[in-house]
Amino acid sequence: MNTIASLHAHFNDGSDSAEALVERQLARATDPAGEGSRVFLSLDQMAVTHSAQTSPQRWKAGRARPLEGITIAIKDLFDVKGEVTGAGSTVLRSRPAATEDCPAVARLRDAGAIIFGRNNMVEFAYSGVGINPHFGTPRNVWGRTADGGGRVPGGSSSGGGVAVADGMAVAALGSDTGGSVRLPAALNGVCGFKPTAVRVPVVGAIPLSVTLDSVGPIAQTVACCARIDAVLAGEIYAPSPLRSLRGVRLLKPASLIWRELDPEVETAANAATEKLRAAGADIVEIPLPLLDELFDRAGVSGAEAYDWHAANVNVNGEGYDPRVWQRILLGRDVARGAYWGLLAYRRLWIDRMNLALAGFDAVICPTVACVAPEIAPLVADDERFFKANARILRNTAWVNFLDGCALTMPCHAAGAAPVGLQLVGAHGRDQSILGLGLACEAALTASICSG
Image (cartoon, rainbow, N blue to C red; front, side, top):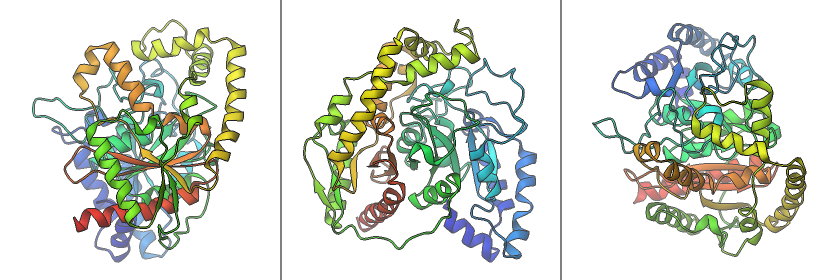
């Protein structure tokens, strides 16, 4: 497993190097039999190799930076100097190249990360499924078949989830408006973190919803996500001692987010909950009616998406994925009074939810209600596609409405369909959730190893 800690240990003792890492990962990304052609929309091998060349000297001189020599793939939503930001679409390909890195990318680069290509994504980030009809759909790391079939990667940061799970990059930078970091992480069996939105600048990223957008990492472990999150937020990463789960109170809501689950998801998530209970966590199962109340409300992203496209691209839908365009058009008919009313409702709902969650360290639930569906049936049938999209997004989108933070980590048995367990915290509880995530990850890993 390519964790940042293990790679840095090997870089430091000279048994591995950023140059060798890049060589291995370029080989995987360019393998004709692999998923690289669908995972990456562009990958400048010369630039990546050049970026790796200075890393060994920094390690020898004791000047290694927090992410020194770590490869991070960038979602096609973020500005990278000299590259066109296309948002997984064909309609923006004639735009001029970015003249500078967006703040998130600049912080990664300044911390020593090697920017490793542009990841494929759902067009304009407007789906949780991961399908892209323009550039192909990266197949999920689980369930690929020899005839080219496979399962959805989750979206919208689809290429990022597959790149990390397939070992093409150590980590990936994604955006999360309704789950777009957590969904591909969970469905591909890796970790993903959605921070409190204000902690990481969204400047230089094409928006889906200026109200709900956030920026976070996809990586192999919770510790990797925590290291990258600190860089993205402009903070100093200070690993804390592994906390005990004894005395930790986790809310398992008797709510829709624990109902109507695929059997594989229900089994894995309940087993994980019991492992955390055995490790000392107090799992409290009570209703959370405020959460179920939210599912009857429309979202704000549609109106904001339509306004951005009307002002910056076009409003005729030419060149768009028809399913993405259909969702964008829904925002055209949202009355401004209804939009402002929903924002007011959100403000009060957040306050009420924070009161309801007081006294709990986190909310715990499956990240996704289902395992990754097969790609072909969803491509062929609009009704099945939109039904699957709603189901995939159900357990994550409410966190963005809450303006909270959330972490997903794998909880499935080895070889089984990937299932993610989600820890949710209120606004600003990021460090607490990441610390708790480390303890939960250790408990789940210990249980798997002992089993």
